[in-house]
Image (tube, rainbow, N blue to C red; front, side, top):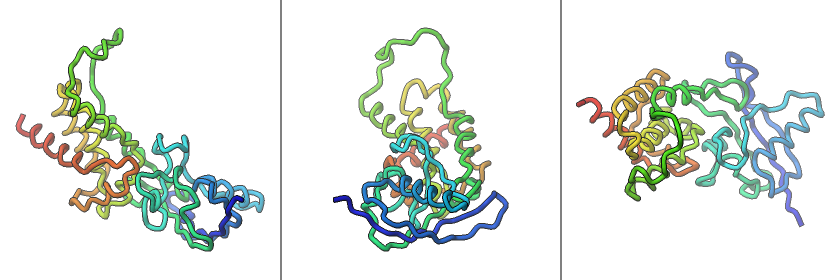
Length: 250
């Protein structure tokens, strides 16, 4: 028999970027424990729409933990209490009947609130545009094995490339630092031969853009690593710093 629970949700509502926001309470009843967190919000929004009330705005896309679109601070923790889990992968079986659940948007100057739980994360896009790519001649696809890459480097580069750019690291950091995100993107390219050609300009440009977007400084608190749904290691930040120092001496 399917188990259901009742919850009290306290959700941040903000009608526009410059509007004053507040926490609003909602009761959701008979929520299936097999639902995902976003499916539960879908049910809430259906009820609000039927009542003629404004539905709660939140981001979602793939709902498979791949795209990095969803992002909600749940009871003070980005993506909720389960490790290596995005909001769309979080299921209601992890909550207790009668529990009060607090929902807030990512909190950072570089991620301004658009509406309710939706924030503007285009700062990440501008950082990637500043240097998160390699330049190469176009044409027919080269053979996959034409450039030898040591297996440890290839595996570590793949680990860094797992970053989905959700922004949980920023939301968790007391300084609102984007160093884990930027470090991962720099690392995935600097570890490969194809990325070494532009390594110096890449790290300088991406770090400069990160600072221009008003992200805070990293002080090694490690909250970013703790909440990352892809479990990106803070070794990415150390690698970014080494690359930056090397670039300064070139």
